[in-house]
Amino acid sequence: MASPSLPILEFITRNYRNFNARSTRDATFAYWDHVRKGGRMYWAMAGAMSSAQLGISLAPAIRAGLVHGLSVTGANLEESLFRLVAHDHYKDFPDYRYLTKNDDTRILDQRMRRVTDTSIPEDEAFRAVEKVLVPMWVGASERGERRFWHEYFYELIQKLPAKAIQGDPEQCWLLAAAKAGLPLVVPGYEDSTFGNIFASHVKLGECQASIVKSGVEYMGQLYDDYKQLSKGRGIGFFQIGGGIAGDFPICVVPSVKYDLEQKVKPWAYFCQISDSTTSYGSYSGATPNEKITWDKLTEKTPMFVIESDATIVAPLMLQALLECLEHPERADELIAESRAATKKSLARRR
Image 1 (cartoon, rainbow, N blue to C red):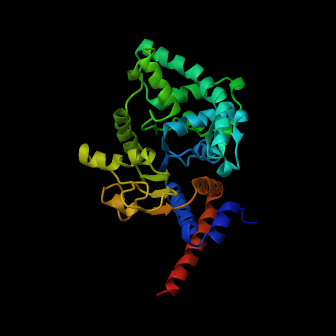
Image 2: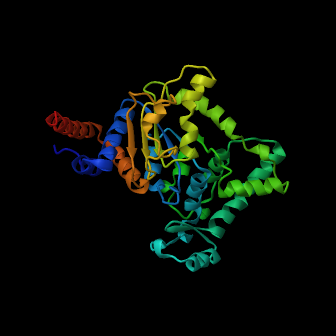
Image 3: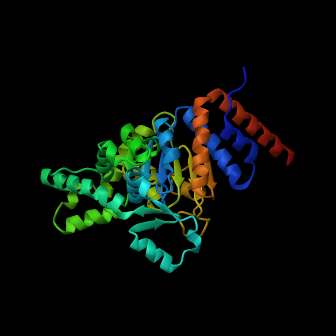
């Protein structure tokens, strides 16, 4: 019987030998090692990955059990929803590098909000969602309810009528996360379009700021989530970009240890995909070793930095991992063969 084909994993093992390619290969292998043995993985997602349609890759990974919790920016949260309800109204600008100020002014006049080479439609996305979300806030204010920011979106996205959906639900990571009930934190949610919209309705006296639980309460919830997720083989940390989406959750380990004065496992894996090069004083550009000094990682933690475009790297890794889940024995063979070849190469330099 012929061996099953794992085209993306085979491509990575055959072609990804050096530089960022090697980091991608080794990070993929270590991710598989971790989940194969029962470990969990926590994702931190910055940037505009939802507008870049990472959900095409991330949603199946969530459904397959490759992702067990997330920290995302308010923008990524809402933009996953926008892609679902307004997909057909997005406009792309593949020649964005050559746009003039006048070109961008025309885009503004078309009520489009450009994000690199694509754009979010004001009326079909922001304003359409606003008509549903604001009444939820007003109702919560009247009832004195309090929820985390993402819980409003979890409820909204699961009750959307079919006629309100334009995108493919199978490609919506927010919907997949909501259905799975994944632990999620949205630190600094105020720095998003709907964070601004919420602030305006609070200022106008139409709803209460207290209906959304604070960032401090998010950390309190993360203490509990981490304790559950880190049981057994532990939980790894997979980070796209920098900023608060990554900074906030990775601090849970030293906070439990030093602030709560309780025992806690360190993160069991660390990988960051970022185009932020190593630099002085830049958290996003800090090497993983620096995190050892903050007691977030240890010298034994598998650590990887991939200085590349996450829209290219993350889908490749996720597809390879999905192949591993489908054919675990063959995946183990391919990875073992690749590691043996690397070990042989390293031995020649001695």
